[in-house]
Image (cartoon, rainbow, N blue to C red; front, side):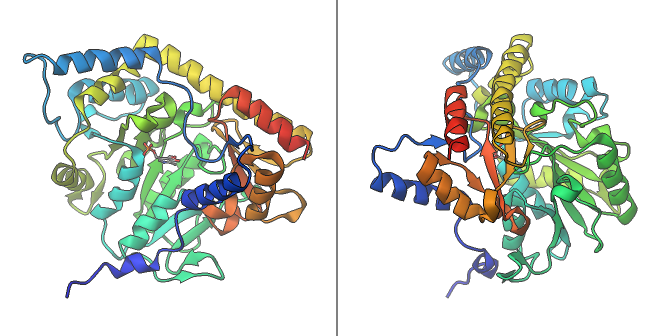
Length: 404
Ligand code: PLP
């Protein structure tokens, strides 16, 4: 008889967004005329920018022609895209990252889940609490935790770093020393940014204790403040301790197109073993390259027209974030985020639990948000609203919430 990976049996409950979808479907079934506004899931609503569409069309035409047809892509990505990323996301920002340190993929979710495979089973993992659930679940699957502890709402053996109002949602260095530290800034779900000086402390700490930082920069395009870094490699010494994840989903609306990349610098080593080489081996073994058509679309993100159009798209969502923040603040809510990220993190009123507030918002305002407790124990009593809706719906949703 075969056996299964028993670690999967430790995983808690069903996925947060499936729970939300079920509750919303039940509500709609009972209230078929309800005019629902969805500010829950972090999915974009604006169509792809014209420069991206043009690049997609042109790449499709390439595929129709024997001379310009492309089959399997190089597993690490085409040079045209890796060079554009290295120039625009790194060299232009003064970061010392080369094109051949960039691994193109189909998005940051897969990479953030898969990157743990190159580390040993005994590594101690540290995550923020609240947290993007993928970091936790994939390490549970890999057996790096004990069982789930329902009272504490966490897994034994994992280091949870509270991100709360008192530390303005930026974790403090943990008392217990981790081997792998997941940081995501600008943060999902709290919308918090980290300053360059704060991130430098983390980089210095990781180098001091011999830990690796897995830095998720999926929301860097939303940064508006100068002292908030776009990349961990803006910090000195990060080449020796940090891996960086990027997504084209939020800066360019590729949630349905799928493209991302991961940087593993060649200086990142465990003794004499290069993590770059390990990830290269893993990527080449299990991944067959992002499609040519999609990589051409990715290249267009860095064209002058692409940059201008995508800046406008990011500004559009950040205008929504302002509507949410200001509307809720004026109505007496305690609100954070929304300045360097398209997420607003609010305290539930009247000491309601996150799910109680979810139900209230659903039934009284027909607005769908995300309960903070779904992201971890320290998210309890908080609620996430996404700025990725349309402007009209965002204005309408906030009017409804403030009248509740
Ligand atoms: N990382 C974070 C922090 C996210 O919030 C998300 C999506 O919501 C992702 C990664 C996933 O990105 P992608 O669409 O590239 O898989």
